[in-house]
Length: 326
Image: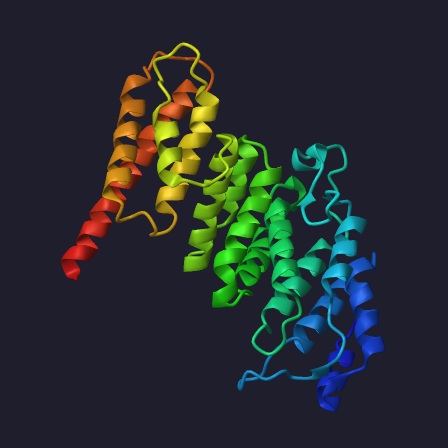
């Protein structure tokens, strides 16, 4: 009945789901090796966690996927948690596309059910704010697993659903908590840029989270206890590209992170002093790093600075245009 969709039809007619049935279908969703059963179970949970036109649940449900059940499932898929049990990570070989390149079993169904749980927040809070923070950190971490590169749409939907799960009063604190959690376990290399890039949502919350993740990464990199944007900007712009010992790879990472910090959200658009200082530094990087400088990552740092400078000029022009309209 589950495979052919009759179970969902029966549940809709009855208007409720027994706990034993809900638990059984969730177990199949999370752990069954049968792909058709996984998909059918995910469709079933999508159906019973849907709302009608009036915003009310389609069926009465007493059993919901708990954070602990979802976390155990992630562990069974081979993902690791630190000793505090709050931060998800994957092994280096997995992130780099190691010897076992097979897709983790049931990961698509896991992402789908988490998304479905988030979308009924208005009528039922399945996860506490702290649990939702941890799930959001897990979802962001999954973007580092190269085996999941073909699942960007499903990952993106799950990520966006989790971002929108928090109510307004929770989001300001939770956003910082998630950003700190991510920054504490991602090293300052290209992976940290992938983490920032994966937050592609166009809504205000996604933009703020993207900026906040960049801020926390820079804070940890410079060993700061407080995320002071002005101080971080001074530290980045104090890097002298003419020095022989200049680390251009680190500079490249700093350029991308700093630009995301300043321009992902509108928080710093009106800070003309900071924005102008950043544009001047980008201009210096693009002109002072010579075209014949072939030190490691020097050409990429120069090209990135030039690209970001052009982007910042376009953003300024766009902002000026909006001001004129007002």
